[in-house]
Image (cartoon, rainbow, N blue to C red; front, side, top):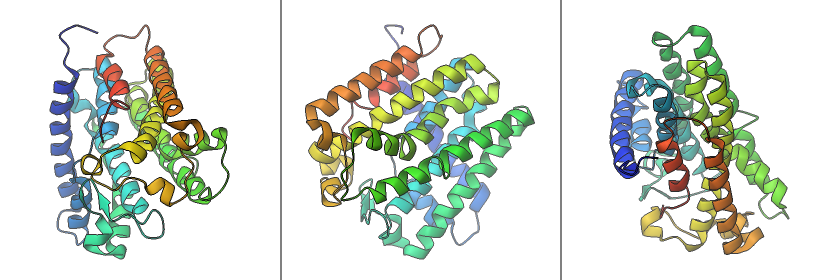
Amino acid sequence: MTADWDGAAWSRERVSLVNRWLEEAVERRAGGTRIREAMHYALMAGGKRLRPLLVLAAGEAMDPRSERWREPAVAVEFIHTYSLIHDDLPAMDDDDLRRGRPTCHKVFGEAQAILAGDALLTEAFGVLAEARAQWPAAAVADAVALLAEAAGARGLVDGQARDLAAEGQAVGLADLEAIHRRKTGALITAAARLPAVLAGQAAWDAALGAYGRHVGLAFQIADDILNVVGDPKMLGKPTGTDDAHDKATYPRLLGLEGARRRAEDEVAAARASLEGLRGTEALIWLATAAVDRER
């Protein structure tokens, strides 16, 4: 990493770019529909944009033209936002605040929130399919398959189902890791891998897969820690909700210091996954930022 490389500046510039792409995508794919307002409300509520940043960090290491990675960046944020809308519903986590604002179902009602999530999930694959204008059709098909697996019954959805089923149950470390590798880690790993899949770069794909798995787990451990010791104003949502739902978490199983050490170990492993690859400054910075944060 060069001494003058500024990760925070890179992140700010890319977040601004991603926000513009999201605005354009929701207007292009949902403009004039009854559901557009709820989709836009949830999408543009702020947030870290970690998943599209991972797409851009990985993609720009192979091809620095950010525009080439627009479709996968938008697609992963569409899916992430859908998952947040549904997670917040009364039937699941029953949260009233997200990113410092009322959750989607509190503003638009449960039915419209469910439909907004459904639309974002579905439109994500339409957006990703638009990448065929820049990449071989077979590579785009592989990318669609990767994202579907990450978001579906063997990935994010299974993680959420396991998480709900584990409430109030005695859960060991292996089971907790299985939950989070699916619920949080699957989409983060897919975000890191999508550029390599589109570009047909097998060596990058293997390295980014390992990197994404470690970053995903580190990010979730940091979330668990912030739910205990974070500032609700910084987080934009209440703390202590994991305990209120009797959820298994890393601080519960390992203690706060043990959880912090585990997160640091995962970050170190993520960085090690990139050894021998060029242009990985942003990826290394994001691995650290995944845990060194206040929200």
